[in-house]
Each structure stands twice: as C-alpha cells, then as structure tokens.
Image (spheres, each protein chain N blue to C red):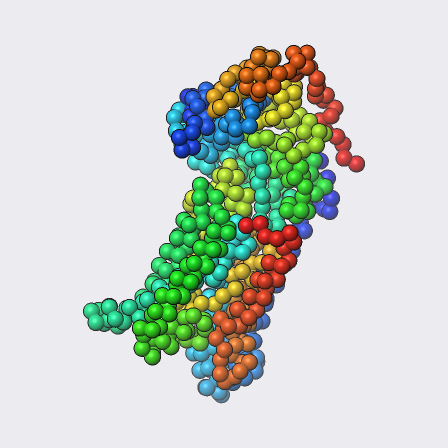
Length: 356
Length: 269
C-alpha cells in the first residue's frame, strides 16, 4: 500500500507513543509528589511512616496518623481535585476559544466565581441568615458555580459575533469583567466585618489551608464527573480548532460541544474557587507545557492536564507550606509568581507579534 | 446519472442584501460541477448553502431527497465533505493530525490502524506526505491547502464505509497552489467524479474550469445566469456582460489549456 510511503515509520507513532509515555510518567509524578506532600511540612514525617499510616499498619505515633489522615490527606485530595479542575478548564477554554491564551483566571471567570462566592458570604449573612438560619455548606460552591457560568456565558456572548470568536474582544472583555468583579469585591470588603474580611481575602489570594474531608466531599462530586466527562469533548474540540464551520463539516454537533465545554468550565472553576479561592495561571501553564511536549490533540491534552495540574498544585502547595514554616504563603501568590513570567515569555516567544 | 444534491429557489440574505437570489441547481452523481463568477457573485455563499452550513431564507436544499438541514451533522459528514477556502489553526497540530481529523469519528467498523492508513494515503494523494510530521502552522499557503484537501479525501474515504453516494464541495481549492498542484488537484477531483461522486468546486480560472468541469454554473449578483456544458455557458457575450471584459472568441476556453492525464500524479522521488 502506498500509504506507508510516509517517512519515519508508522505515521502516528511519533506523537502517539510519546503521549502514552507521558501520561504514564505524569501518573508517576502525581504519586511521587503526593508522597512528598504527605511527608513534608511543619512536622516532617519520614516517607516510610507515611506509607505505613496510609496502608493502615499500626504505628506508635498517634499524632502522626492524625496529621496525615485529618490534615494532610484531605489537603492533598483537595489540591489534586482543584489543580486538575483548573488545568482541565484551562485546556477546555483554550479549545473552546481556539486560542492558547484563554484561561479562566485571565479572562475573569475565576473573578466572577469569586465575586459570587463573596456575595454569598456577605449578602447571604445579611439577607438570608436572618430568615433561614446558617447557610447550608453547599451554598458557596453553588454560588461560585453560578458566578462562573454567568461570566463564561457573558464572555462568550460579548466575544462571539456571527459564529466567530474574537480573541481580542474576549481578553479585553475579561479585563473589564475582572475589574468590575474587583470593584464589587472592594465594595463588599468595605461592607463586611472582620470575620467576613478574612474570608474575602482568602478568596482573592487562594489557599488550600482550609481543607477538610467535608470540603473534599463537596468538591469531589462536582469535579470528578467534570474530569471524567471532559475527554468526550476531545474529538469535538480537535475539530473545532479548525473553525466552527469546519467542525460542522466534520460532523461535530458544534453548539452542543460548546455548551458542554462552557458548563464543564463553570463547574470546575466554581468548585475550585469555592473551596480554594482564586488560584491563577495553572490553567494556562499546564496545557501549554503539555502541548509543547506532545502536541495539541485533546484526547491526550485533557487527561494529561488533569494529572499535571494536580501534581503542580500539590507541589506548589508543599512549597507554600514549607518555605516559611510554620507560617504559610497563600498558594495563589506562588502560582502567580511562576505563571505571570511564564505568560510573558509566551507572549515574547511568538515572533511577528500576536495575531488577535 | 441521478440528481443527488438539489437547490430549489434558494435565496440567502445578509441584512437587506440578497447574496443568493432564487438559485436552482441540480448536482448529479458522477459529474464535476464548477461554479464560476466574478468576485462577490455569491459563489462561496452558495457552497455554504449546499453543504448545509447555513439555512436559506427561501427555498430548499435537498441531499438525496432529504432537506439537508434536517440531517444530523454526524450523518451529514458521511455524505459530504467540504474543503474551505482557508482555515488557520492556533494550535501546533502536525499535517498528519489535521488530515486525521477527517477520518476520526467518521465511518463504521474502522480500526484505529485503518484510520491511520486512510489519513496517510490521503496525504500521499494530496502530495503532502513529505510534510506529514511538520507543524501545520509552519507550512506554506499551498501546502496548507493541500493538507486540507488530504483531510477532505480522508473524510470521504472513511465515510465510504457507510455511504456510497457522496458529495464533495471545494471552495477555491487551487487558489494558493502552483500550476502543477492545481492540475493535480483538479485531476483528482475529476477522478472522484468519474468514480461516482458528485463534485462541486468554486473556481476563478475559466480555462481550467472549462477544461475540467462537466458542467459550469455561472453566478452573477447572486443569480444563476447560465448552467450547462462549458461551451454553452462561456459565450463571448455572456463573459462581457458578467465579467466586464471583452475576450477574443478564438482564445475562449476550452481550447488553450488541456489537462493531460500524465500531469496528474507527478511521482515524488
């Protein structure tokens, strides 16, 4: 068959096998970083004892088991979920907007979610608590989800004309949304009391420090289905990268794929903002590094983003916990410190300017 | 041969302007139909109507007797493939990956390896196998256009595992190509028509259109001015009226260019 005339062996083998290898490597990375995150901290716990506690072997140190199972393990789980959610929602948004610069943090979706969460804290206390008593625990994630959904939809409506999404409009609209959300957040902090103020600054800086099993149990049912559903959009997003008309020609139900992507992004961003505040740049750095390593095929990119996003956030959180121990840096500061220069480098690397 | 794709009284409006004005068109299986006309005549819009991408304001487009807009996209993709004028990519897909997009999710009973072979063969047929592993974004305009032709060929091939009667729509497929590849692509399109497909292309080069097309459709201001065999459509009076140029009858197509069969597939060393 003449088809095999393509040089360099089986035509799909290069990227295909590298992608499989990378996925396996990333799974290994998640395991290693997770063990390190369990072991390191204000109280160092040797890896052997971490493994012993996790496998249920009886230990003499009851305190260690308590730290590991009630403090570090829920924090680890939350970090994996949030990191995966942020990275995958970044990859989904980039596929949806057909542009590697889209990111829930950059275009104001996280800000919209945080604003809705803040509104739930401040206004909820003022308006709802006198009537219905303490807010149910799910109120925050739901508020943040609605905020993320509205912002993503608003962004899409503003940036899309006649089926074409203008990336310039999207980024600028994102700046406007972010500024508006920031202003309203400022107004809320002016209104709020000391406790609410502490909560609010937590949203804007981002942190995993409040991790509990209850939080994990609230976030997991939102993020896990989202992570499992995202690969089903992979073929649609691949085709969409050629353009909406081309994707339709290739048999992709374009409106359906777009609606699903927006919904999944809103769920992921809402859940992660509600549980860990605004953590920026994970959604842009992770998919970009993976595209450089093994190409933009979303069938690979989405699961790989989940793994690397989880590993990156856990690693960053471990640094945030240990670098100034026993104090903690907000993790959002750390991801911004890595992510913002990376983003600038991305802009500079593009020769011949940016075609918006 | 039978009509497979039909437009009946089709109009399309953009604001107040009629981009397409009550066009009737019958595309038959096994024939190569070429749409010609000056800039802004509505050629691309007509193609977008014919492929089901946009809905006509008036009239109907039917594919195999069914209103094309009622066919689900997934099924439609087995029946017709479309090569757009130009499409840019913001992600670093390789040429092979772009061609593979044509074969993914199309067809039934195809193994992964079958799809790989389909994409590889399509790249070969479009004469871009040598750039298969290069980043699409770094390719020249002509190479990109041929990669998209490969993608369309892959889609047709994969779709043939389900549907025999297929339609291929090409929007200015040779705009960026050098002469050799222009002839090669048109020859490939002709060959597909001869094998039973209905092929519709928008072309600017009247001589190539006359030399390769079975039927020409001449559009002017959104209306179909003439349709039929090249010699009947391309009269001197009509060319003056539509294109605003006066041509010497001796030089009228189809005489000057003849597509020799052997130019079709230049062997690659």
